[in-house]
Amino acid sequence: MWLAMNRNSFVFALFVFFLVSCSSIKQPSEVFHNPDFSEADVIENEKRRIEAIGEEKPVEALWRATLLADDDTVSARADIVHSAYEKAIADGAFFAAYRFYVTLRNVGYAKIDASPAFERALVAKALTDVPGLVTDRSLLPKTMADCVNATVTIWVDKGIKIQNGIGYADRVLGSGFFIDKRGYIVTNHHVISDLVDPKYEGYSRLFIKLASDQETRIPAKVIGYDSVLDLALLKCEIDPPFILELGSSAGLTVGEPVNCIGTPLGLHGTVTSGIVSAADRKLFTTGSVFQIDAAVNSGNSGGPCIDKNNRVQAIVFAGILQYQGLNFAIPVEYLRQDLPFLFSGGKRTLGWHGGFGHTKKEGMKNLGLEVQYTMPGGPLFRAGLMVDDVITEISGIRIYTIENLLDVLRNYGPETILSCAYERDGERRNVLLYLDERPEQPGYEIYKSDLLTTSFIPIFGMQLAPSSTMSRRQYTIARIIRGSVADESGFSELDPVYVADVDFNEDKSAMSVQMNTRKKKRGYLDVTIRIGAQLDSPYYF
Image 1: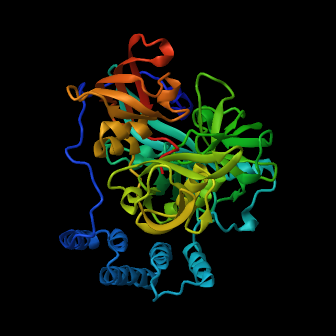
Image 2: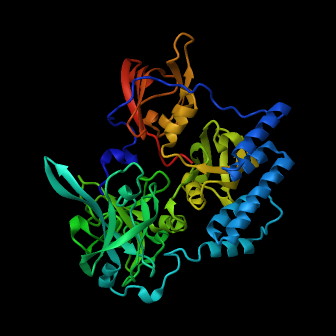
């Protein structure tokens, strides 16, 4: 699958939209404000809200109880989560049990063993059967030919499509590779996306083809998938001839040689070679990927990128059609983090705290994550974090950068309570944060939840201040975030702007705004400009 240029985050600034919405500005009827728990009636109302969500979201109810700081409510809610934890243990669902365990440990629940030794034992049980994390070394390849035989062609049969009155076979071809002797296969989500898309109503069936037998189509099924990191776990009922071992791409540096194996344009078992061109391309919204110069074409998606020791260091996922040698691969660390979630089945959902920020720097030193925005009603907002706070620790792990924090969050699923340490005016503070489910488009969720003046901070990197009592569309720019869309579009603080209209594309993944302004950098000449931004980025957390 090829990556269109206007989808890349490195062309994040100005681009053209095919707009479908009307030219209007909709402000929320009410913006969430934290309740004042010094009032008795407010406390009782919050207890009723906690009770109302308790059955469906017991962990969120417990977290809301900790914010209320009512010991009886906290104790009652913790007992409910503990019952869920014990049931998961009894059912052998150790991966689910670990999520409850982390929550109970962080709220200081006394009825669990909070020792590091117990936690390590629980984690070991949770990961026992996860494919790819423990390798049967008897099936490891010894030669490049063996590596080819550890890969497969992914074949998604979509029946017949009609073009100009003529029927054509409709199918999607991709690549994959075995990671476990039980027949588990890794590929890209976009290769099998029609199989798991609830909006897709057409015919589809999934098969694989072995490199050694291109005539036989073997039925397979999707176990789990992650649309954000573009990964999927499949299974077929055969004994693989070889399996590939997962390496550690943390040690894979720029200039290192790599080999890619896949089925480009239907050419099975093709091996191409190249080097790692760059290691920190931000094409995903929660992490960085490798840029490689090994030849990659349509059909290579999901194939392994292996090192000189025949270990998987990355998974090929995209190239740019217009430019040869400009291709990308997903670091194997993301796959390692994803596998327990994929193995548990279904869609892998990521967590977030409802915030936006960048790495706080002092010279060349990274100090933590500087909070630049908190969404009303989101976990950060409810917990009392504010703009300019610097998050320095999550779940006991030191945080230096935004990438560092996102790496930590990927280890946990939504509906988990994590500990957080942050600094405000040089003072260290501690708080409990709820890990909510990350929306598909965080920027759109923010736009719906907040006023234009502040929702433009994470979306465009500009904070607005109303400048007219006669017009609700007349503003002055109060703040510009360096490197943002607003900054790269030439806006400055104190520039006057009139917001003429706000538009979204069909799936609400991108937003554009038409503004009339007199830019200081343009000699205060009147100008009409339309700027656009994607509604997800690596700076939402």
